[in-house]
Image (tube, rainbow, N blue to C red; front, side, top):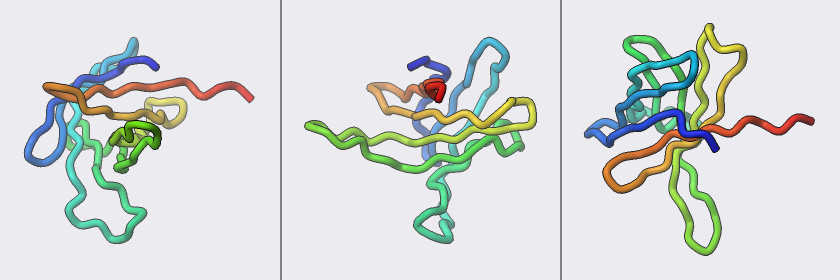
Length: 103
């Protein structure tokens, strides 16, 4: 997994920076307080006033269940959407990404 962002929790979600070789953006995860259905995203991801993605609360099963956010990022400058995960840690949260395996 590649670390592509560092975030801190806020009253409304998370804020921080996504940084890759071609991208360096301040980003906010804003809680979706008006979910219309169970499948609606739990968070909207914003870069300034632009929509940059969505995120859903998930739990990784195992001996020690792990809460995280499943994140989908997309914008016109990306060749295809990016799937990532936001994991809480002491003092903040980390956004990580893994390239899908070739078929």
